[in-house]
Length: 214
Image 1 (tube, rainbow, N blue to C red):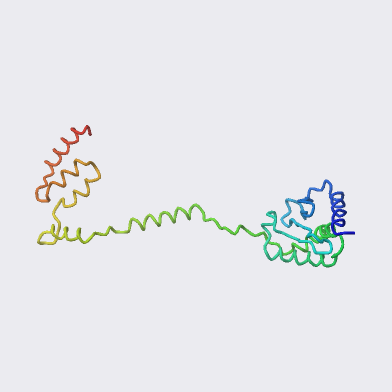
Image 2 (image 1 turned 90 degrees about the vertical axis):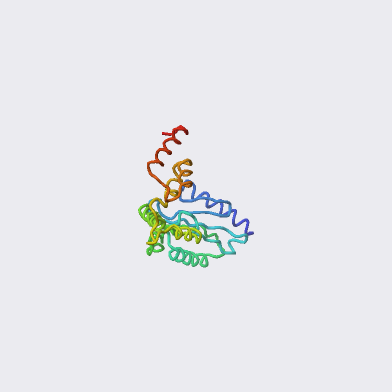
């Protein structure tokens, strides 16, 4: 009997044995899955067996890579696979899928005795951590002082009096530049010694009326 004939006979037997069994799934004519344990059982796992071309003379491939097993630690998976490999060696040359699935069911507790559900590999930070981090960045930005260029420093030195102090209103240009273009224009054309608050306010009101602003 050829390997293909052996596989065909075993396939028919598996379909007959597991008909109506929700734990069994035929992925293809050479690949099968079986869930060992109930869905709500924390120690359940999904065993997958695939036939190579020369099975059963060649060992089948056994896998625990299904997403269903994502909570099982790597150590536990290795332990299950090592025990399943022992069963494969003991049954090499014979139809063994049914034997492997049934052995796993009978020995579920032993195979999973050291199982501790693993958490996701990606750890998410809490929303409070996100807010704290954002506040910290904001504070650092506020604490960062404005750096003056050499030209700006020379200009400031030229404005200081004999006491090294800047005259009143020296920075009005910077303050009013963002408010309205006409106001900025007034301040630019006035020197520090010529600025008069009342005159500036009258001109400002005049310009705002002309521009339709209140």
